[in-house]
Length: 70
Image 1 (cartoon, rainbow, N blue to C red):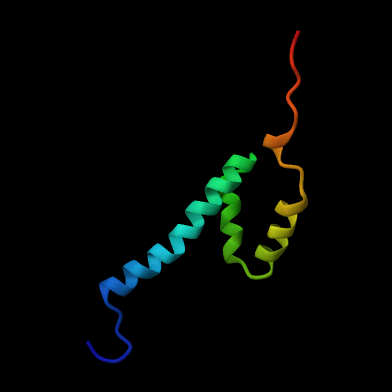
Image 2: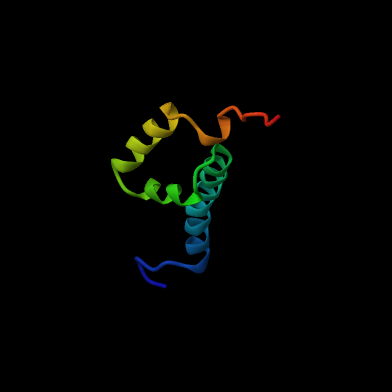
């Protein structure tokens, strides 16, 4: 392999470092009551910062009090 080549192990490490945060944040979004697809916005610059702000201050659907039926 010459300069600038990429080995399979480097590719595996990059995929792991990308998929680990996607999996973790996907679980957090799911527990909060949002779709896991919201995690894809993490890869868009500036939108990811705005979405962190939205998730921090929004009312999470799973934290709404449930009405008890009589």
